[in-house]
Length: 207
Image (cartoon, rainbow, N blue to C red; front, side, top):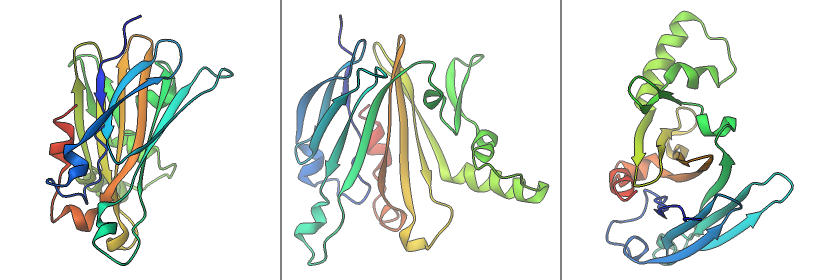
């Protein structure tokens, strides 16, 4: 059985600096997440890496924990960053995402803002719907993923509510091959920090 493509988990938080060693140094890991989902991973050398597999539901997964390098530069402890990945059957609802859909005419994944609004579970009035469409259109950015033997999507979503200093950017992604999909999510950092150095394009160009 052929392995999945060598997948670089590009989930480095936006608060890292581009010249930080966490970006430049990587290590390779093999993740056997069950039948049809044997994945080669490249992760930051500083990451703590774990894998699990459940025979009951046939789903395998894993996670990364990356310590914030700013802990070396400040007396106040900064919480680490966590990212996960799980291997799903392609027909699992998670694969379709809450803010994307596959456009068969264009043969690619596209944003679906109305789908994201529906996922809130609230019946909005006409004016509120207009405002939400505008806000989510600004907050959600889609990155199509295409490689030799797998394709899929990644998208980031910025928090719209809460104290501005505490708002974060979340990454969600699915990489699909045959009957399996490798999906996950993680926090990419605080939006206030991203204004100083937005590394999202740097991250996604390495998929």
